[in-house]
Amino acid sequence: MVKFIICARRKAGLTRAEFSNYWRNQHGPLVRSVPEFMRHVRKYVQCHLVAGAAPFGGEPAYDGVAELWFDDPEEITRAFNEPRYLEIIRPDELKFVDITNCISFITEEVPMA
Image 1: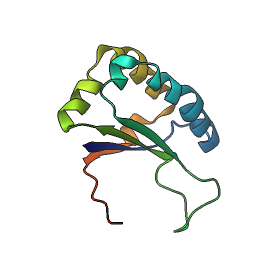
Image 2: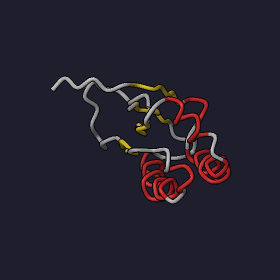
Image 3: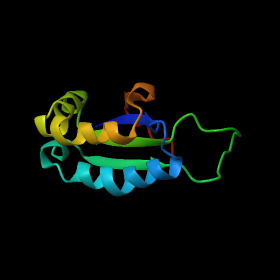
């Protein structure tokens, strides 16, 4: 199993609270409602920033992290090439995420505890 991690930044003009609210209450349910995409996903988690918490000082570089688990990297490609993802989910992402300033990577978990 692999994990696709996306460090997300909000679009200009959105507050962090607006971004988080939209992501949690609009986008998350929308993603879950598209079975053609979700059939590839084993787990989907949104990691929202905790208001007022800055353990290393300063502003966080990102506004949240999405984690999506897949069986293998090829399944990620299949999921994000699904016509219904491209038709429904991708346009919604563009409403609240600054896509050009996000980063993503594929990882393999190595439990340490």
